[in-house]
Length: 269
Length: 292
Image 1 (cartoon, rainbow over the protein chains, first blue to last red):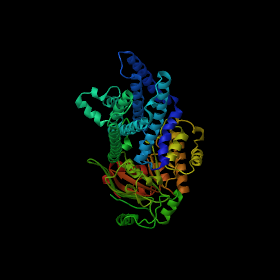
Image 2 (cartoon, rainbow over the protein chains, first blue to last red):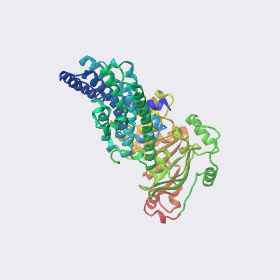
Image 3 (cartoon, chains in turn purple, blue):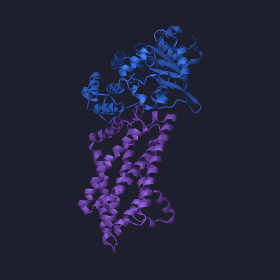
């Protein structure tokens, strides 16, 4: 792996932000809208009936973590799409760049923007709604690590799909977090789902995080079997990350054979 | 039909090339880590071609885009790849660049097999093509930084300053590439193409859409580069005057095959044609009845 080539992919995106401040604003706008909207929704829910736990504590925390994961996925996809929109694939893949270096560059870009976005969300949640995500204590670290790597896996997977089907498949990348949220227990416990849908939940690593988080925030202590759930989530994430990388590489090799890389642009595919 | 193969000079390159390909690659030194100048000196001293292509073929389903072509490019040599649209020129270049996998055949750069050596070998080459744009939303300088890092160019800041001056791009250094004129964009593409001082430069219609004055300037820059570094060049163009002025040797491709090759000044008369353009038209229209 060449640090220089990974850096090339990173600074290419950095220059875009530097050259156009509206791109920078776009990182924050949706996050701010998310946190403000959900902040008020949870504040309203807390006023209804006899809530057994603080909606703000749980839902706002879940929104912050889920947004972090979503931004990682979309950050990778957006950085990948930039190369499609600027018809830069020939220049990139005709250089000494390896696929793993390219993906590392995309991940580095996305990580940077997502961390900045995460900090903004944490600050707004704290200032506007008096919520601190750090209430989760040290468990925040494994939670974030699993969501981070799962976001990377999803970002690479979606990019591979676009790489396979062409730029017109770009739209596929946007609803994926919403679909995942159904099975992840972000807004409601997994037990709310019908039994056959819970099978899908078992395959989605964030579901273990948000279920575990819900128990910790309502009971104050992790549920029995929480450690094994965390381990399953970590193993699933590792498997998805590996599969996504292999899938992207496979699509790259297929495109090398078919000649798609040389003519990869919105007009041709 | 007459097919002429090989480099002009001391030996029959066609036989030597076949011998080379059969023997494998008796390369004992790992030259990938040498500087560009050293690699070129090494190539010329050992009489090894910078680029060697053997039986290269590319099929897209039933269509054979490139059909068992073989040729080599020596140090300091400029090879013109000519042919009508769809003849297989760009497909050949894409295979050399490593963005298209050949169906069969061998591509060697400085004695190393492209397929076996991996992307690292691409540090020795670069390209400019009329259809390959650098990102339009980055400035000239930013583009050179990005590609400099991609090719792991040493002393990058100094190199960029040199290239901006060499290609008269100082005044546009902080202008976004998308705002450049065709001529300025071509100069930027060339600056990007030589940022790593490649031993092998692939130029796919580098002067297309340029006015004669800028096209002349671009040709001079490339010839200077070859003179200074001894790099090998593969050049495609539909401008026959340009090919005649620049290339040491031309290869005529038709339906994916090399139909003719030789000195661009001598080739037309050898085939009873007035000039290269007339020969090109004959190849393009009636490739199978052309007589030597």
